[in-house]
Every structure is written in structure tokens, then in C-alpha cells.
Image 1 (cartoon, rainbow, N blue to C red):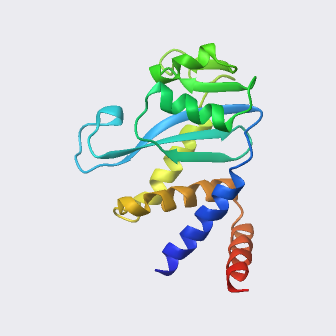
Image 2: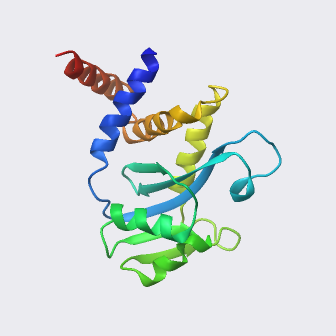
Length: 178
């Protein structure tokens, strides 16, 4: 109960901080968490939770659980969170194809051809890796609390210093108690 309340507090403050629009170079990607069956991976896997994320290079992360990875869903979030005329990097998933005709400078990266030059999405992929590694230790997370765990991972990346993390949580708890 105590840790759930802390995650609710972190999620609340992370969502408040997420009202600012992203500027600069942005990496976008979708990922899939959970699932019961082994074997199927990625977009075709049953029982997995699709999640979309934006990462400002050298800055913060924003994540959101999505119903699907269709173009309308992804572009709506990008248009809501990123200031127009910014550079947006993505993989070559067809859901991002409509970014080519929007107000963004879109670069689609084919991992098989060009892996690591200036055009990459390694930052957001690194976030997915760290989030999955962090959540794996819980041996399963209830679906209704998944958003809280995801926001905790987002907050940990945005606030990497443990002393700062503790100071922030203490301030937030004091704010509730007062």
C-alpha cells in the first residue's frame, strides 16, 4: 500500500511536469510490455500492453499507454506534445509515415541499414530497456497499476540522481501532510 501511494504521488507530479511541450530533437517509439505467452514478440504478441514514448535528446521522457500503434493514435500524441517544426526521429513503422506530411521534420531510421549516426532512436530504446529491466524484478504487475510503474520509470530517468529523488519525494509527502 505504501509503495503504491508513493507511485501515485510520483505519477501525479510527473503528469503535471508533462504539460510542457517538447522542443529540440525528439525520438519517438512504441514498445510492448507484459504478456503471458512466450514466443510471439513485438506488435503481434497477445496480451501485451502497447506503450508510446517520446524522448527529448539530452532531456526528459514522456510515456503513455495507447490502445493501438496506428498512425492516428501516434500522430495525435506527437502533435499534442511536440512543438511544430522540430526534428522527430522514429523507426520505419508505418504508423509514423504520416509524419512526413505534418509540421515536423521527420527522419525514419532503418536499423538494418544504418545503425548509429546522428539519425538514431537509441535514447528511447535505452529507456524501454531500462524500464523493462526495472519492472521485471516485480515478477508481474497488475494491469490497473501498470501506469504507475511506467511513470515511476519515467521519473527515474528524468531525475537520475538518487539524492534528488529522495529530496523530491520527501517534499511531495510533506506537501500532502501539511
